[in-house]
Image (cartoon, rainbow, N blue to C red; front, side, top):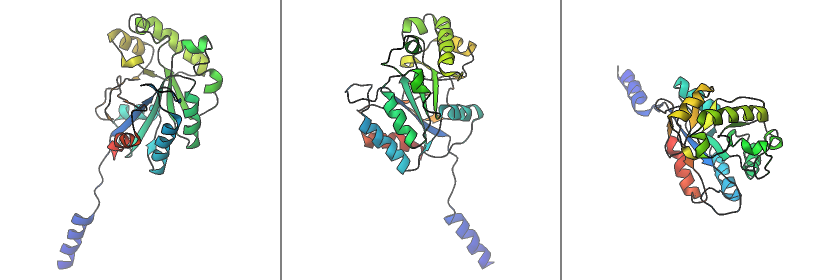
Length: 237
């Protein structure tokens, strides 16, 4: 009996508990240049951030995998991160190359008008075709609120058609420009087959509770020091 009590005592006090994790952190970037702005991250800062994630064994997943986890209310590995990039700036090619070093997936939100007019300030089809681990999603046709908020159905239809033409596939994820939405836009994206949408606003994504039509993301720019970046991504530990 004493041996049995001793064994039960050891299991109770020394077994390591396992807690189900349902949280992820979604990161939002814009330009990756040497310039200074509220929407820019310098290349060296970006490199330091992904080096930190890699050295500390973070679990970087695609936006598609995150959407699947939200739909199915799945658990996630601790330290789960999703990369997103808004507007399709050409400077994001720098981030693409660095992410590719670690085979990290990422999602790029395209303003589809910029592929039509071949404005090389923005990513073009040849840039998108270089990598297989990235996802390209709809971020409106013009990026003007007067279009995607006030004439939502037309804007969503045009941007959906153009992104399919550019990438050869339809990904049912929409990213709201500026994080702005209204009932008309939500109705339009759902009518066109979009099942999930990302907004802005700091906060963990919880696969049990998150509104799949407004998934929060942390804005990362040069005001986010490496220490601040660590505090953001370590919330899921």
